[in-house]
Length: 136
Image (cartoon, rainbow, N blue to C red; front, side):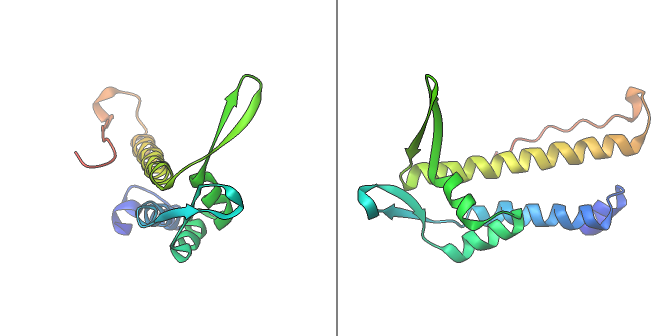
């Protein structure tokens, strides 16, 4: 993979960041959620905090910020922000959505980079790929 990424003109830094993002996407699927019944709130929390810390490190964010992003959903109701506490299934859906979004953005960025490397405006050198994340 690294050789292929270097072949299309990615710098060492971009290759490392791409591999790091792919690792984060793969490890997101390993997160497990359970109910936190403290403070009379039924909110999902990550059961395997070691995996949470690993994914957060790959994404260069704090583990608590990632856990909050996956465990809660903020909605605008009229002119007020409301926080919805998610159950484990909802939090799991959130991590699936995050993984799909990260994969889609990475794929779009790589596709754009490949097209820019071709450096021509005619359609003879255009590469267009369509890939939907997840099992087909």
